[in-house]
Amino acid sequence: MATDKLKNSITSLKNQFSKEKNDKNGKTRINRAETFGNVLNEIEIDGFRGISNKITIKLDFPVVAISGLNGTGKSTVVQLALCAFNKLSDNLPGKANFRYYIKDFFPVSQLDSPISKHAKVKYTYQIEKDTKEQSVTVTRSEQGKKWSGYKRQPKKYCFYIGFLVYLPKIEKKDFTITLKTGYTILESAPLSVDIVNKMARIIGYQYDSISFEKVQNDNRQTELAKINKIGKSYTENNMGFGEGRVLYIVNLLENSPDQSFFVIEEPETALHEEAQFRFTEYLIDVCIRKRHQIIISTHSRIITNTLPPEARKLLQNKNGNCLVIDNVSSCQISSALSQQAELVICVEDIFAKELLTEVIRKIDKTLLPSVSIHEFGDKSAVTSAVDAIRTIGKKAIAVRDADIGEDIQKGLFSFPVIGQHNTNKGNPPEKDVFSNDIVFHFFKNNFDVDIKWIIQLNNSDHHDFALHIGEEIKRGVEVVRTDAIQQYLSDKAVINAHQGLVANIKKALTDHQSYPVIKTK
Image (cartoon, rainbow, N blue to C red):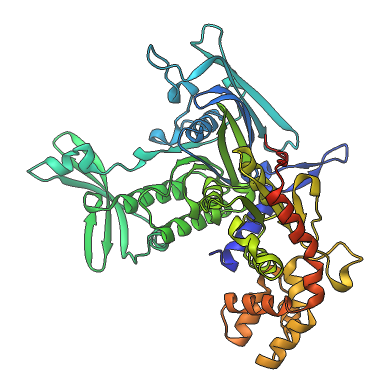
């Protein structure tokens, strides 16, 4: 689903967030605070609701998505993250300047004990104009009534976007719903055309205008969002929940100070899949423009898959302990386990998935009913996925690109090094497939095109080879990919080169010995 524009935006944001410079000792350190202001780099949590053990969450991208099954601690993580900063100043109205404390999210009473006696949170920051990281630990007192450490925290504007950021006034029994005598419009504040267009792109409607209307009845005042669309107008009293929530979230993100910190709980609520994708695109865009840092909790497959692997954090519960798996989401793992196969094979992308499927079909098709092959992203995401699946007691291996190499003892296999490259480190499978002579002549004879020239002309990322060839011959990416793989595997030398890989898959399937968890925290 990712477009070239989205890929470029993600790359740009990665570069901004990973900005480095040399310190006085010549060592390279991350200095992202120069662009994003005071930044939360890491949070270490010990002894809280849903997280009885110590875990560490590294925030490696400006937008980080925390996923996991219900009860694994997603809300605990994002709410504690919101308590990382001191109040910046007193010149913002309302809750825009609210200072959050741990007690705000974890009330203790006779019936509630969401934290342990010695609970603590360690926050690690990048501070503006300082290349060294700084850490602050907030701890609970022996009596369990107070917390210490807040005063040393850096300052930043913080915003919590929970489910009540937009609550339909019909549910609140707001006076604008229940009154019988009408109300007076005191003031109208139109949103800019730019914000209206951003809202329209996410929801998928064309809006004429959007405004916030301050209204009054007797001594009661409130604010109503009002939309003009296709010649008609309506307020949030007649707005769908998804539409209203997106409006309030976008308005807050756009009108808050640059370099603010946001926590958003389950932004996918009441949004269709295309809107979830567009909303995630918007989050990346707003972070590029306004240098915000955003943490979200989510169950959405669309949101986590749209974000890059380093933005994904999966929480798993094992024997009462919480585990953090980097680079993958709960939806990806659930999908991988849904087929009930004996062995899950994790690969980087759809090209590797289709190639490996056809390799197995050619060499030993009896294995196919017992395996399920799933793409997870880059090499780090593949390794993390293997960890996550093994952690819950399922068999999993990885088949990575030839240029990555393999570690057979850990069940990390790779595609073979092919042909003239067998003295080198190897290539991603796309490069081997589209540089194969049989594949070259197939496209030359059937479509009168030189695929090597097409690839060179477009200076392509290997992931886009099939896309550019398809554009030239007026065929879909899937057709190009399938044709190329079929021709590639008609080469006997290629089949022979893959025999060892299929043998390793068969051994992993039949071997009763389990591979170790590689790097789960």
